[in-house]
Image (cartoon, rainbow, N blue to C red; front, side):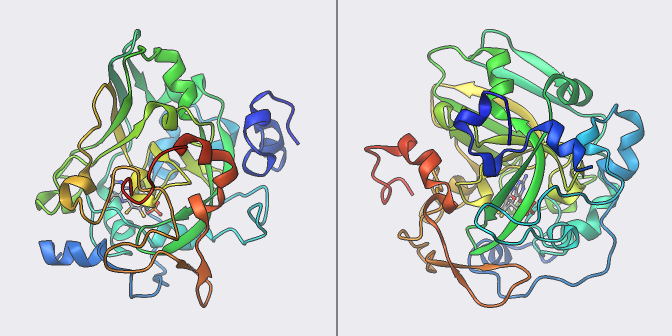
Length: 335
Ligand code: MTE
C-alpha cells in the first residue's frame, strides 16, 4: 500500500501515504464538570443540524497555502472502515459531539460556540530541553511536514468512541527537527488561553491552560500524530483547530486541542486532569478494559451512531504496536 520506510513501523491499515490519499481525491460549576468527564455520557449524540462552525476550512483557508490533503471542499475519506472493519463516523457526528471544556461542558456546545474563535494566525513554540528551540508558524508546519490520512479509533475515558479519519503528521517528525537533548524525558503540551473567544475559560472549572504530557518515547512512537485536519479538510474549531495531538492508544483527554507550546522536560508534567482529580485520571491514561475508572467500568464502550455496547480493546486495539512501550510497568498503578 505504501512504499515509504515509515510503513515498516506503521501498519498499513493506519497509514495511507499522501499520494494515495490525494488520489482518492453554562452552568459551569465544579459539579457539572465532574459529571461531564465524570461518568459515561448519558445523553445520546446530538442530532443538531447546526452547521459545523467555520474553521480553518471556511475562515482561514485563504491565508494558508493548504496542502492537497487539506483542500477538499467536502468531507473526504479514502476508506470506508478502520482496519477492524468498523465504519468511520460521519463528519456531522464528529463535529457536533465534542469534549472541549474551553468552550462548554455540553457535547454540542463547542460546535455552537466555535464561531468566534480565530484559529489563524497561529504558532507553536517548542521550548525546553532541545538543541534547536523554534517557533513554528502554521503555514511552516503544513509545508515542512507531509500531511497524511490516519484512520484511528478515539476512545474517550467516558466510554464512548468514534472512528475518525485525521489528517496530520507524526509528532516524531517535529521532535526530530528540534533535536531533544538526552536528558529530556517528557513532552509537555500546552493549550491556548483566550477567554474572550472561549467562553468556558471564563470559569475556573479546570486550571487553564489545558496541559497534557507524554514520555519522550511515547511521543516518538509513529502512531502519535499532530493533526491539522480531518476528513480531508482543516480541523474544525471544535475538534482542536488549527493543530492538536492524537494519541490513539490513550483515552481521548490526552489528545490535547489547540496546542500553542511543546516543552521538553526532565520531570513528568503536571497535567490538567491529574491536577483536577488524580484518583480518577492518571498520567498514562492508556486504554485498558481491565482497569476500571473508579466510578464506572472501562470494559465496554458506546460507538457513537450505533446501538449497544462493544468490548473495549487493550490499548484501544493498538496493542501490537505500543505494548512494548510499557514492558515492566504496573498498568494498575500507572493508570
Ligand atoms: N483538549 C482541550 N484543549 N480541551 C478539552 O476539553 N478534551 C479532551 C480532548 N482534548 C479536551 C481536549 C477529551 S476529554 C476528549 S474525549 C477529546 O479531546 C475529544 O476530541 P473530539 O471532541 O475532537 O472528539
